[in-house]
Image (tube, rainbow, N blue to C red; front, side, top):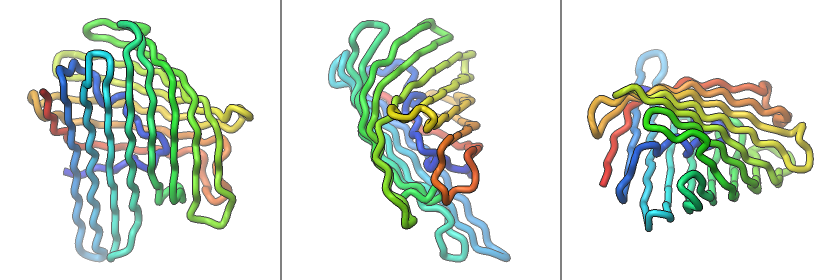
Length: 241
C-alpha cells in the first residue's frame, strides 16, 4: 500500500479519528511502505497510531502519534514526527471540554520543533444517527523553533473548528475545518480544511482517502508558498473493546 503523508501540515487532526461509539478502548494503526529502485533509490515509510481510553463515561483520554520518513539515495527528503495527548470531559450530552498537548517537527515546513498547549469547549450542533455537526473553540499557546537562523515564535492563538460527518452504510464522509488566528493580530492566521472519505471493508479494516488544504496568511520568509495541498490514502486497522 502507498500513501502521501500529511503529518507536516501543522495541525494534527484528531477531531476526526473517533466518531463511532466506543465502550472502553479503541486503537487504530495506519501503516504505509513504498519502495522504488532504478535511476534513484527511494524509500518511504509512515505509520500513525491512534488510541482512545474511557476512564469513565465523562473522562476520555486520546493519544495520537506518527512518523513519516522519505529517503532518496540514503538522504532525507522528509522526516516528520508528531505526538498529541488529549483529554476530554463531558459537560452535557451535547458539549465537552478538550485539553491537549502536541509536539511535532516538520521537515517540509522547516520547523525543528512545534509545541502546542491548549484547551477549549466543543458543542454538538446536530447529533443524529447518520449526520453530525460539531463546533469547537478554544485558546492555545504555540511555540515554533525553526531549522533556519531566524527568531523563534511564541504566540497565543484562537483555535476553532467545524466538524461535519455523514454516513451511508459502509461509507463515511467527513470534513473538518480549522481557523487559528493570532490573538493579538488576527491578520496572522492559519486555515486548514480536510475532506475525508472512508470505506469500511469489515469491522476491523477500512480504506481512507483525504484531501487537505493548508493556508498560512503570514508564512515564514523562507517558505515560498502560503498554500499547501495534500492527498493521502491508506488502510486503517482497528481494534475496539
